[in-house]
Amino acid sequence: MLYWATTLFAVPLDVLNIRAVLAPVELGPYNRHAGYQYGGDGEGVFILGNRHVVRLDHGTLTLVQGSRWLSDDFIVHELTHVRQAQLLREHSLDKDWKRKRGGVHRDRGWYAAIAEASRNISAWNFHLRLGQQGHARAEVH
Image (cartoon, rainbow, N blue to C red):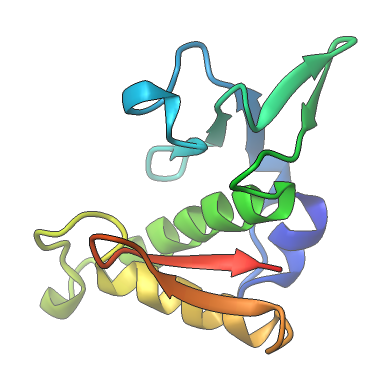
């Protein structure tokens, strides 16, 4: 997480203010969500990882590789949400940046954060993939 938070975006994220933790409950229907990013304006950020992504191992949280998400994919995706929130706060007075219907994977902040990240991930390793409902997802391969 330290590597990606400081190199992925145009502005380094404050790694001392970001914590990856094991989610206290299953996230999403049928435990399908890998994680969730939560943080208020100007507060610390928590990246909640579902148990198939983050495990408690001898008192330390360890990212594990699942069948659908690699460890880096999970971290990059959730850090992109952290950057998205920063961008939306920076442009809060601009009406074109207001959140619209369609969810967090379809607003201008999300696409701007992905664009920043794509510059710092080599072209053959970065894929912007559209999911079943048209959700964009950055993946590292």
